Image 1 (cartoon, helix red, strand yellow):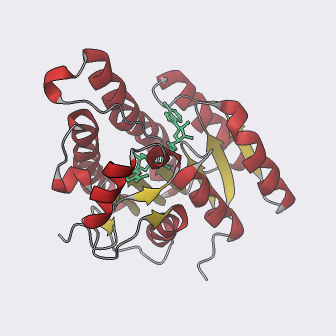
Image 2 (cartoon, helix red, strand yellow):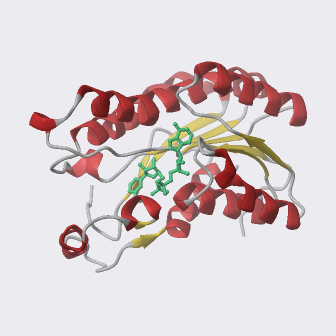
Length: 248
Ligand code: NAI
């Protein structure tokens, strides 16, 4: 089992779904966790579980689109634990609409959270990671950034941006022993996908060779892999976790 004893991780959007599964998977293997979410009250049950497990945890009620709050979160983490080993940019939203009907605020909100938010977090942790000459950054993209989809231009642009950002930062910091990778999940059973109409779910399922949705913990396993000290020569990579939905 991968060991994260003594490691410090920040996971954005950690209150539910893939973020929560990632937090639990890292914590079960020993990591201390800085946990952020825009909706703060939703963090409490996760924090209790982490504390019952004997893990150290910092709670941040941070909206990743708030540059100053992101900066403070990073400063407080470093002040408390002296370092940041792992950043998981997981916070994300959808506001689906056809391009012709898409409102400017639907476009901007999704780009702001999914892409700007990841950039703010990366920029904030890099000075610490460069100084310590160690870091693992994992950005959650999406299969639709690779395959396209109807009604998700804002989301797809943000996730394709995440993949580009991943590669750009990976090249910039490669000599500092910092790896930067993305994960492209397929159709995963989380609160984000729960509310989709049955006919949309049926259509998505028909496109998945494995014939089922993925679970949040199956995505978390990919995060653990890329976050581990052992995967030190993988950088700028996009790891597909999609049941065969898209094979690149
Ligand atoms: P979710 O909606 O269940 O959880 C997202 C979490 O992010 C929530 O706790 C939410 O409150 C938080 N969040 C949203 N905006 C935030 C902000 N501005 N600042 C801080 N926290 C914020 O979503 P899910 O499904 O767990 O998705 C996690 C990531 O995986 C997202 O980036 C999503 O785009 C991506 N993804 C999900 C897929 C799926 O099928 N569920 C497929 C591909 C990618």
